[in-house]
Image 1 (cartoon, rainbow, N blue to C red):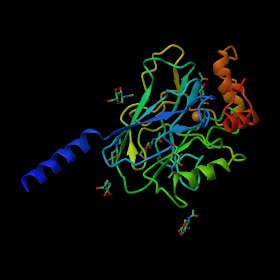
Image 2 (image 1 turned 180 degrees about the horizontal axis):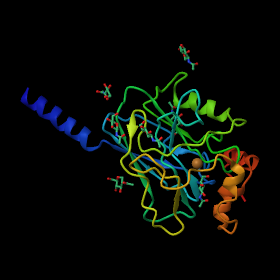
Image 3 (image 1 turned 90 degrees about the horizontal axis):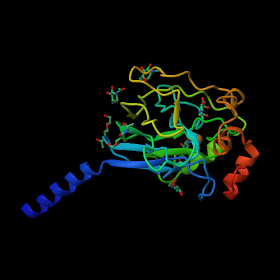
Image 4 (image 1 turned 90 degrees about the vertical axis):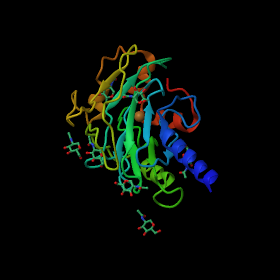
Length: 240
Ligand SMILES: *[C@@H]1O[C@H](CO)[C@@H](O)[C@H](O)[C@H]1NC(C)=O
Ligand SMILES: *[C@@H]1O[C@H](CO)[C@@H](O)[C@H](O)[C@H]1NC(C)=O
Ligand SMILES: *[C@@H]1O[C@H](CO)[C@@H](O)[C@H](O)[C@H]1NC(C)=O
Ligand SMILES: *[C@@H]1O[C@H](CO)[C@@H](O)[C@H](O)[C@H]1NC(C)=O
Ligand SMILES: *[C@@H]1O[C@H](CO)[C@@H](O)[C@H](O)[C@H]1NC(C)=O
Ligand SMILES: *[C@@H]1O[C@H](CO)[C@@H](O)[C@H](O)[C@H]1NC(C)=O
Ligand SMILES: *[C@@H]1O[C@H](CO)[C@@H](O)[C@H](O)[C@H]1NC(C)=O
Ligand SMILES: [Cu+2]
């Protein structure tokens, strides 16, 4: 009996220690599944687990924004939103991260990338993820993804930067933003307000900022049109 309870103690201690998991934000055109994805796109995470989002998909300009099963590409009222992190080229160190702590593992958490450039936006191109969603059925990641892919004609809503979400929250904005060319836009602050101008709700104005002299790799995400992006998603080709 003592041996059994010791093993249980060791196992539960281990479970506490490993309560951390990582999701990559964005990928590359050459990767399977293309640029517009979270990897992995679906996880389970118990209360207290830290989910660390890593902006290692570069070049890219992505957000982690909470939504709902029915409206995959619209921000959820009172949902979390990381704001946008821009990475011009693959960073070898200092990749920005964002730590989200799970506070309710009983309800699925749905999220998307709120970037609208290139049109129709990353969410309608399939950049959505789930935490604690059922593995099958109409509330699964796959069902959520299919709904997102069908929203191409709908303009995604403007995310509202917030560290606090429904069933999960963070205590700091994404960081560090010290790498070469790395920047943030519409990042949340501890008071819930945005530290910068909120992102534009229009792809047109978003594409005018910043200057068009950005590097070719940045132009990939700032000026490629939706059809090209779709083809890139389907065939994994470079957007040039
Ligand atoms: C952030 O979320 C909290 C909790 O839901 C809410 O009280 C607050 O108003 C939100 N802040 C903003 C800027 O929306
Ligand atoms: C996680 O926390 C939520 C909110 O407090 C609670 O309802 C739920 O029962 C907790 N989950 C577990 C497995 O205890
Ligand atoms: C979970 O995500 C992976 C990709 O990360 C996908 O291939 C798989 O179909 C998803 N599973 C479910 C149950 O949705
Ligand atoms: C999901 O399926 C359940 C039954 O399995 C049904 O009650 C529910 O309305 C469905 N929800 C959606 C959004 O289709
Ligand atoms: C984080 O979530 C917990 C549980 O829902 C809540 O009590 C707490 O106030 C939240 N923290 C912030 C900063 O919103
Ligand atoms: C997220 O957590 C990791 C591991 O504790 C830490 O190294 C990193 O600095 C955190 N990121 C932020 C933005 O706080
Ligand atoms: C990243 O995207 C946001 C939202 O579209 C935009 O406001 C910001 O200017 C972009 N950053 C760069 C460096 O392009
Ligand atoms: Cu994105």
